[in-house]
Image (tube, rainbow, N blue to C red):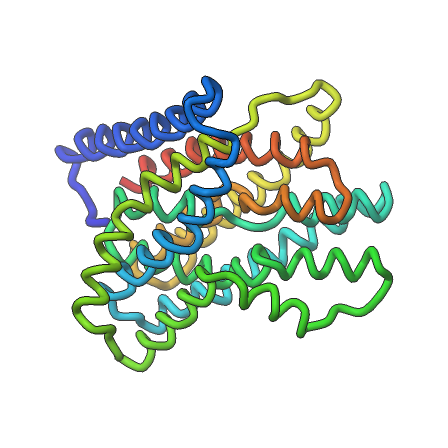
Length: 314
């Protein structure tokens, strides 16, 4: 994102707010169409599979094709991994006093970032390719935990056994998005480019990702929150977004990289929790309803936080 002078700040702020409102409108459209039963219950599963396996990988390919991966950008990969390790550890310690089930629930629902379906469309609609690739590489590190690593760790805890790296790797290998990230990172590191027709096709399909990803979030949004759940949600909100705020400030002001890379990292840590956290919660025998409600809250909160970060960085 280029720096703007004082005369252009107001215009830039208006653009950010307008884009944010457009994204909210798409989320609300999906939610309303589901509530009035214009779309069947299976619509969320269909759209989410399309996003995760088709449009998001194509968007990743397109963004990588327009940027040179520098050593500074490569640092975003371990950064994403370490941020999630911190959040998993926070969940482990937070739930320790209340037993194994609470620990597992907190580990699954404190960690993981929904970057591909939320932060990436948001950043792509407002910033340049350098910030987008910064977010993509952060997500590659995040995906190791979010697409199976945390769940495998929790399963091992519940079973009282050791963590099997093979099982974790198997889960991760099933993620088309993660494989796409790693493949494009390898090609970029080797200075190799995909053929023109492939990039053109990926650009055409990937252009639909922003709409479909936000529409999908609306289809899956759950606004029913029980009073008994509010205490846990309040604690989780303070910890998750408090840590995110500290990390965002540290990344933006302390990392020795160019402005767009630092801004991309600051925005990435404010992404909501992974959309598949609720599914993993159910797999581990946890409260899926609470996980779904918490997911919805993080989506709305993240949109506000990311918009504020952009306004402050203008």
